[in-house]
Image (cartoon, rainbow, N blue to C red; front, top):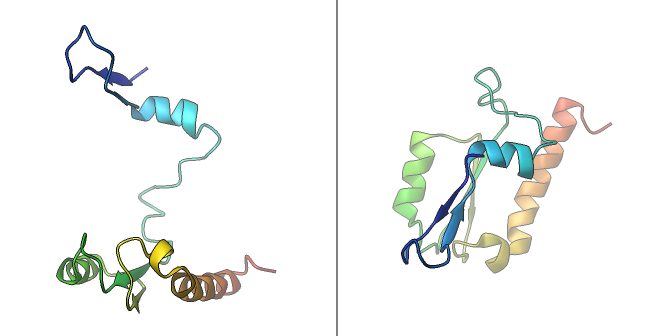
Length: 112
């Protein structure tokens, strides 16, 4: 396949890491999942950007730069959360996403 072992401590020592290539990923890890990213479908899934106001990994300026350069359908701000919003503010994360998901399901008719 197209996977590789890495020997960062020299070839006579045990492998230190393993890189799984795209062919191995497709045939071994998600062989039952159809490829969904196509040129025709790109941009068809609505996106929400959640701004984490206390994120020290991706600071606010960078988050807003990302929003400006690849605008989502909607922007939500969650105050008092860090980079891992699902741990620092799980309820606040779920409420807007859950509601937004239901809106999409109803609009597209996939929730009958």
